[in-house]
Amino acid sequence: MRWPAQGHASSAISSQVDAPGQVRPGAGETAKEAELLAQGPPVSSHVPTAQVPASSLVPPDAAMRMFRGSPERNLSAVGPIPRRPKLLWRFRTRTKLEGPYERRGDPKFTPNFPWTGLGWTGQPCFADGKVYFGSSDSYVYCIDALRGRLLWYYPNHHSIKGSISVFGDRIYHGGRDNKIHCYTMSGKMVWETRTGNDMDSNPVVVGGRGYIGGEDRHLYCFDPGTGKILWRTPVEGSAESSPCVARGRVYIGTSRGYLHCCDARTGKKLWSFRTLGDTDSTPVYFAGRIYVGCATGNTGEKGHLWCLDAATGKRIWHLAFPRGIWATVAINPEKKRLYVGCNDGVFYALRTGNGGLVWKVRLADRIWSSAAVANGLVLVPCRNGRLWCLDEDTGQPVWVFNDGFDFDATPCVAGGLIIIGSQNGWVYCIGEAAPGEKLNTHWFADRFPVKKWPDRNPTGILTVPNPAPSPKTYNDTSAYITTNLLRPVYGPGYVRPRSQG
Image: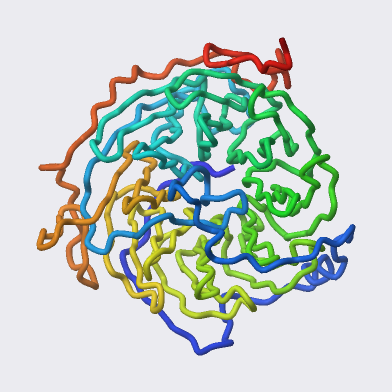
């Protein structure tokens, strides 16, 4: 699990551009790693790989409806990243206490442990001019992005650390209350289905079926209309990554160091690959390949980035890193590049074909968030509360936003806006400044090196009111409760299908 952590590094930034073909992200494989890699994955029926046209990565409505934009998890932005940024509004979530009922085995989570803001992965959704996001405070919020006005909020029984999804006229997500949730777009409960444990995984709906990973060591397939579990496949360790669905297959990573490929219809495992570490990074499908990162653990942590054949699970290339890879890669299909941050504070631009290093830049603090790339810019949040905008070709900084705390969440880039949440409770909406409008140096800097960091003076910034009451503590959120396990419970937004009478 990804939990809040304190302590921030210095503000230094340095970049390096290497010649084509030079790869220097970290040390090579150890003897033990080489032994495990030599075992190879079991190979099943082969599905021909296909090149994916770049146009297929952009949804027709230019909305960001799920974590990483598409079921294949290869769309990090729908619209431009602002070059002259302006903070349009901010909104503060509530604080949810852990409560006395969890009993999940970690002594640091006392009953008074606070949950607030947006956690890992925490990417908001954007559709029809509205922003939807789940918060660690247990609420799902809907905000009019253009007017900066809260439209509704929905209370859950515990935190939502992952990302929510919008499919059709429904909202879906998992949570620390151990349930898969479904609501209407106006915030009415449709159904909820209890599973065996927490879910950081982001659900995806493809072909009339929903998929989500669970920390109860299962990959789930559910009926998005009724909440009925269609199948569940056991996996090694908790499945905190989000399922990637492509070409009739579902790919998911696990905490025990596996990437599994399952048949989307039946849940049957087709192949499994040893990643060598906790694979919470979400697998990304692009042009017949799967890209996924992992981390070996908290003590002596190292990282790995893999490129695999999506049909067979065979390794195409592999890079080792000095610290873990918790983020999900961002793809630029036109330039055939991928972008990913490392837990040592270094951010990389690599070639999708062979992993060759294009450039790398040290951003001085750990990177758990997943980057976004668009219009020649790359957006990179860091755990010291700084949101960097970099030049895509050189890695040089264009501007930086200073929240001053901790970005674990992934930004939503859509409609010319950036929406991102911090672990201090604040959610920000950043847009493009008007021509000739001066940069607000209380929040942004665009001259480097930065001599004086922005002080976050809120004067003149719209703060959206939050009328949601302080979250309650409930006694039904423990993972030991099995009442209605795997059985949907229906709410006022549910409409019974005609086939059920």
